[in-house]
Every structure is written in C-alpha cells, then in structure tokens.
Length: 238
Image (cartoon, rainbow, N blue to C red; front, side, top):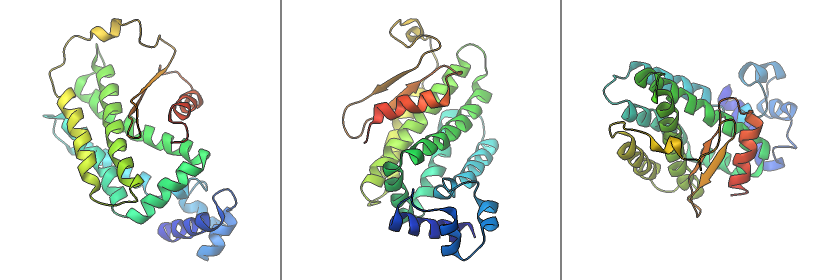
C-alpha cells in the first residue's frame, strides 16, 4: 500500500505539480480512503520520502551489530545503505531529486531527513570515542564528513539522470573521508583558531564549482530554521 500511494502521488506531482496536488487527489488516484493514506504517511511531504524510515532502521540495526575495530569504516559502510536504497529504483530517485530541487519546502524536509542520518552515525561514533575531551566533537565532525561525502557522490549520479554506477563516486568520496579520519587522533590546534565561528554562532564553508561540498558548523542550540536558512543561502538554487 505504501508503494501504491507513493506511485500515485508521484504521478500526480509530475502531472500537476506538488503544490497543486492534495491528499484527496492522491487517495482518489490510488483508489483508497484518506484513513489509508494517513496510516502510512503523516503528511503529503512524507510520501515523497517513503523509504527513509526503513532505511534509518536498517542503518541503526547495522551499526548495533558491527564490531568496534573500525568505527570510521563502519559509519562509511552504514552510509552505503542509503546509497543502495536510492540505487534500487533509479527512475524514482531521479524524479524525487528533481522534485525536491523545484519545491523549497521539500528541500527543507529533505535536510531534516539527512540530519537524522547524521545523528545516527554520530551517536554510534560517540559510543566508540566517548563524550569526554574531543570524543564528542570528533564523532560529530566525522559523521558530518561522511554524510557530505556520500551526498556529493549521490548528487553526481542523480544529476546525470541515474546513468552509470552510483557506487563509484560515493566510494571515492568515502575513501577520502577514511584517509583523513582513520589517522590516530592528535591535538586539535584548529580549536584555538579565532577565524572559526564563535560559540552560539554558525558558519558554512563551500568549495567552488558544481561539485562543491558544504560543511555547516553550528552550536547545539541553534534553531533548525536558522540552520536551514543558512544552508539554503549557501546552496542557492543549485
């Protein structure tokens, strides 16, 4: 039923546009009642991402079972679970990517989903590194790096229309992350760098070009709307 509803929704989104499609339109196309829709999806936005809850559960289960010998490698492998979910249905994934580029509300929703993946990875790493000293910081930064690397490779594939092997670009990006973060932890002089964002403020750095990687640094208490606002400003319409 989830697949039937998602398929009906996307047919309508492509025909009429996301904003002009209602839940009533979706259930009419699917031939079910409104109660059936809300049994599977809390909102119209959720139907655009029907597989992420299952993917998050699979990632959590994977990390719970993995050994402690290679924590960075483990979170990189966990990120590949998301890649396989996208690669399993290239046509749907490309349609969703194009739709989220066109609808600002969906881009915001997508960022909240990505943040949940990042928190899952960071939580696993905190359990390995500890919460004292640089352990928590290291966990957060590595998790953010893994998500940024994975998403950069994934977007290259989606922008191509789903052509070729999506794993190649993602594997290359994740190998770069492992090359940096699997080194033994040392002192962190950058923490004393006054150029870094001050406590309670946030900052974004981005590389030039179409294949840029954006890193967002924000204090824990920063409101989500502020984080999303700054990310949107950095990515622009790209």
